[in-house]
Amino acid sequence: MKKDLQISYEYFKNSSELSDIENTLFERAKEARENAYAPYSQFLVGCSVLLENGEIYSGNNQENAAYPSGLCAERTTLFWVAANFPNVKIKKIFVVGGPKEFHEKNPPIPPCGACRQSLIEYETKQHEDIDLYFSSMNEEVVKVSAVKDLLPFYFDSSFL
Image (cartoon, rainbow, N blue to C red; front, side, top):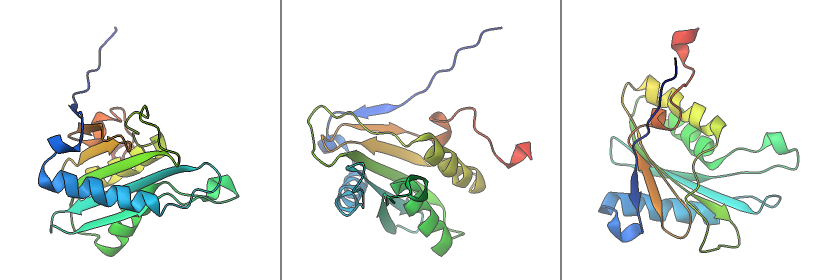
């Protein structure tokens, strides 16, 4: 039996189409991106997170000469937030990434597979969807209304 899978998402041509809070998250993620430590790949990623209490936190990717020892911006931010606010729900996550040398043609950069799996863990834990936005510096933005929209066949604790 063959089945189809459909993913719904929103597309914004530029940041002027975003709400005030979405724009704030976009700007915070861009600022975080500038402080990324990516001397090897020259691929900078920033992430901002809006918590249900209205606070916003951000982080960025951190590379290491021993490549597997680095960490993506999404997980850096997510793990810090979870360690410091373990019982506060995450409402929105905004990711901005791309090469250090910005090119107008860079498409919106989605989270990698490992980050999607980490993000779904917290979406599942809080029993509430998380709005996920991703962009490049050209301000095109893609929004999904749940992390599971990007990882529909996710693995969670129900399999254990």
